Image 1 (spheres, rainbow, N blue to C red):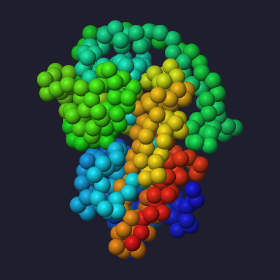
Image 2 (tube, one colour; image 1 turned 120 degrees about the vertical axis):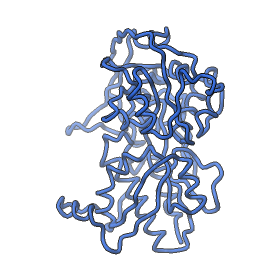
Image 3 (tube, rainbow, N blue to C red; image 1 turned 30 degrees about the horizontal axis):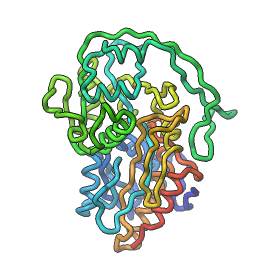
Image 4 (cartoon, one colour; image 1 turned 120 degrees about the horizontal axis):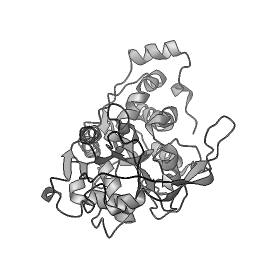
Length: 382
């Protein structure tokens, strides 16, 4: 999708820096919030966004539930949510803005060998049926040969993508795992606030391992948990947002959580688990493996996404999520509507592409998510 000339990034670095620090006097400051998953991406994209649009929005994501509430009570001009708003207000629409992997993050202390887990083992850990690190299921996952996909690259070293935006797999190579684990108890940190990240993880586990994860997905991890989480305070500890659970894992050796890839980096310094996918390959969560999963998803005409958890795409990461922009078709003000359209267009089509280290998939114009986003964006008006 081409961006209008009014939102092209100014090339000169010095000018960009000045404008980023001091937006134009007639700039608009949008009220936005919601999903904490995009906090890092919004921070990384902020200066370039201000330069391109002249506008600003202080984004402090506290959870998808807060984003839905903000749209409902008109305290936000637009919001981000990692799950579908199942009780939308009049004129509310979903725009599939970002695709990203829900990473499984572990504090392995000084152990730098990494970890590979099957979806069945992950379901057991988060359901509380696997309670120690030397459990036979974890040991078995990490003492065998696994296949790892190798992506095709162009002359510049960039990963080649197909028309759906998924990476092209050149081949798979065998990797032999050998790892011993301590008898330490597993401490799971989960989100206590309503969270689209919790919804996406519980949805995937319910589809992939329904005999273990027996409850339906929910923004509340405790509600989706297949049991009574309050009865096991030894193995389960709650914290509010992604940064909070990551910080809890940082301070608790041999603990585990689920969050965005960016929360593995400093100051948390956590290990990102590889996950065995439907093709039997060991997959590291990344923008490329998320787009591989997205290429197998179905995007409805209303912009909502259904992932195919039974797919056998060799590169697909099993726990992949969509972040929706929640916006309105009627803002009652033409200038405001056009400004919000310009903002969302820039964020969805530039931020992930320009900040690959954040782990969000970059859209191509032929990708189904991109087409649905454009269709929904066109509905925003006065």
